[in-house]
Image (cartoon, rainbow, N blue to C red; front, side, top):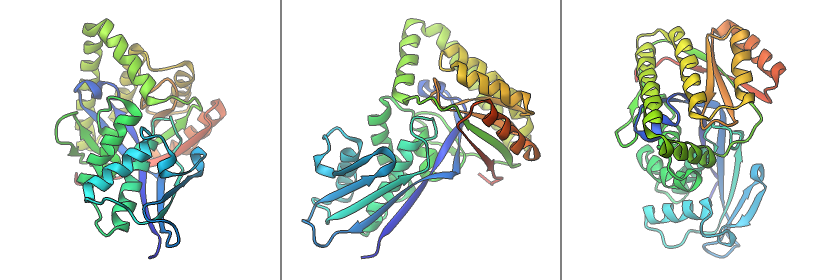
Amino acid sequence: MPAITARAPGKVILFGEHAVIYGRPAIAVPVTQIQAKATLLGAPFALAGQVWIYAPDVNLQSDLYQLPESHSFRILFQLIMQELNISRLPALRLRINSSIPVAAGLGSGAAVSVAVLRAISSFVGHPLNDERVCALAYQVEKVYHGTPSGIDNTVIAYARPIYFVKGQPFELLRVSQPFTLVIADSGVKSPTLAAVGGVRTRWQTDPAAFDSLFDQAAAIAREARLMIEKGLPDQLGPLMDENHKILQQIGVSCPELDHLVASARQAGALGAKLSGAGQGGNIIALTNQDKAVDVARALEQTGATRTIITSVASSNG
């Protein structure tokens, strides 16, 4: 049987990170310039059920069943076998490559899960639809992040801009006018689980103050949706600036992120904010298309380890 390859994009959260875990709305978009790729090959001379995994980006080379039972790949394979009612897979060789930085708020874990789920289900002749891929990837997200909102696996599985409220059906976002973002990596690794756990601890200490901040973030996300749907993307800049201030108050920014946000604005960005869990990872900056290269260059000179220019295309939602 020929090799089966499946891909999944990265993502950024435009508005509402952290608040989304507490029932407030958030907006996220896929980033197709970065992606995870899963390639499956049959291994006809190996024992049935043997699965060899090679993921060079995270220095993993192992038989699946030599990994701890709590490992995300063990859980991922268990879920797909239960979903497809398979007691034993054929012998497989799985290679995973990803250009999505790990622990940077770009959805690396969810993208790997989505790509692997699609590759395996296609390999055995029962390709899963987006809804089932999304649901299974969410179960794996719980391993990575503890109490995830579900926004990462959703925007990545559907590869479309979304408006998301935890526990409610997501909505595809109608983008009336395209807009350009510059993503800049601070180079500071920030595991989502730690950042989310820190916010939860602080929220439990002072729930009234944090609920007020989450409500402010929710109002910004709702306003941003209107601006996107009305074709007024320039108006997102000030909303990004406001959202970043809230994230600072929540306690998830850091000097490196604040420095990049300020540098983006000084270089001509219409607005900028951290994106994702914070305490490291990435910022996003809204720019005019003709300014994007200048803003990216300024961010690299400021200390960003990598920049990506991406466009959010217009759509019917």
